[in-house]
Image (cartoon, rainbow, N blue to C red):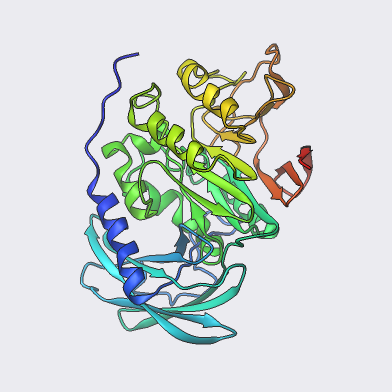
Length: 396
C-alpha cells in the first residue's frame, strides 16, 4: 500500500464546527427523516409536508448527544433564514437559529438544539421560508441503558433498503449508526437526494444518526458531501451515551492506519483518554476480519487490532462486505461484527475462516445493540423482525 496521504481538512468540517459554536450562544435542537418500505416513490416526512413545500428535504436529525442534537433541512437557494423552536411537553420555549450553506442542490440549513436534558422527550418545530414543520425526538441518556442500531452498505434506492428503514422504525432505537457505503455509487449530493433522504424521511425526523464514511461515500471529494450534510464534527470523533464510549473512525483504506498517521493517532489518543469507560465501541467501514467477498483488512489487523486489545475495546462494527458475520479471533477478546446488510446488494461469503462464529449472506436487516451496566446484547434482526443471530456478554 502506498504511503498514506493526509488530505486537507474539508471546508464542511469548519461549517459543522461553526454550527456547534453557534449552539453555545443560542441553544438548538435536531430531527430527521425515513420512508415507506412498500413504496419506491419518495414520501413526505411524518410532519406531512405540503405537496409544494419549500422543504426540498424534510428536517432530519444528526449528531445526537446527551445534551444536544442538530436539525438539518434543505430549501431552494433563495431561502436564507430558518430557526427551530423546541421544548418539553409541547412547550417549545427555546429557539435555535440556523446557519446555512449554499450547495449544488439547494441551501443547507442546520440548527444545534443545545441545553437538552438527557433521556428526555422533546418536540420541535422548524420554521423556514414561511413554512413550519413539526417533529419530536428523545435525547441520548447519560447513564443507564442505551439502545442503538447499526447497519451499512445501503443508499441504493432499493426495496430492501426501505424494508430495513421500516424495521428500524419499529425498533425505535436511541440512535442509528451507519457502517459506511451509505450513498451509492459515488457519495454525491444527487445520490443522497435520490437514494437516502426520501427513503429515510420518516425515521430521521425522530431519530438521530451518526454517519460513518465508506469507500463509496469517499469517492466524491474525499467524502465532503457526507461530512457536510450529516454535520460530522471531523473525520474521526467520539462521544458518550449511557455508560458507553463510541468511537467513529474514517478508516477509508488509504490513510492513517500506521503509528504517526492521523487516524491511528486519534484512535490511540482517544482510547487512552477514555481507558476507564465501562463499555467501548468502535465503528468504521473496512473490517479487520471478514470471510466475505473483500475479506480481512491487513493494515487494520496489523495496527489497530493491537490497540483494541490493549485498551479492552468491547466490540468493533464494520461494513464493506455485503453480508453478516459474527467474529471473535480470541475467545476472551474483542467481539467483531460485519453488517453490510442495509439493503444495497448481497455478496458471496465463505465459511472456512477460523475466526468466524456465524456468517450469512442474501439477508437484509440491522444489528440491534442493547447496553446496560452489566450486559451488552447484539441481535442481528432481519427485515420483518425475525431474529437471525444473538450474542451477549457481561461484566461484573
